[in-house]
Image 1 (tube, rainbow over the protein chains, first blue to last red):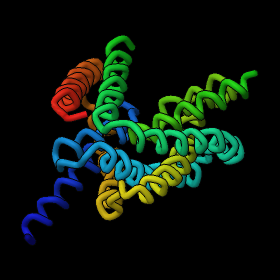
Image 2: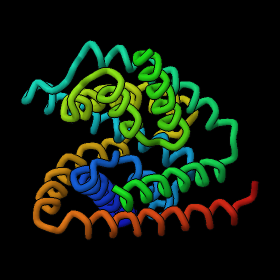
Image 3: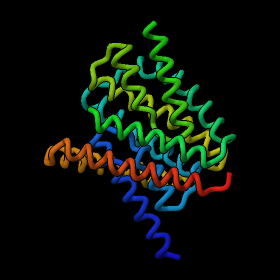
Image 4: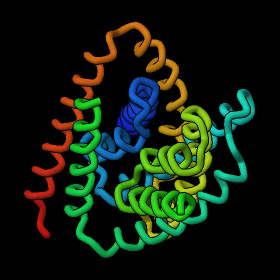
Length: 124
Length: 123
């Protein structure tokens, strides 16, 4: 059991590091990497994977904001908070809709998003 | 008009966050740079703040539905900045085009895996 827990934690650590690496390399958000790895590597269902991914992204966003805002003064606080209002309305609608569609639809939506990411990488 | 378009992009970014668990930065950055006049660096930095807020609300909602493993999320989130540093070092050492094409191939492979998974599941 202890080995299983350690194995699980090591995989999580690897997912976090990989998500960061791809963000640093390509500027894609961590979620692109976190969600599929949680599904294929740790056997999460789609909803659990996307919810846990959002939990991780809270830290990524806030640490990034502190670094960029605190160290370099690049964060426009008022503009950001103002634009966060419609964005929060979107995420409330998105999570509510996600509970009402089959998990396989979430997988298909995610696959479509990945194809868009690939096309953007290829043509840029 | 620009403010309305920025707000619509922000709604779409949040919607994507709720539906598939990504941050939505892909849409927040153009909302800030194209429609609200921020520079690229300011836009990317400010989008991190919006991503943080959106993810916080989204994660709280998902938690109430039983779809959040908090400990797992914390482990991933805490280690991610370490990865960012590695990524930036690698990005400066390896030809950019080769990296982009390899990542595009990897992403397409994952998309194929997700479609296969979806098609093999019961509705």
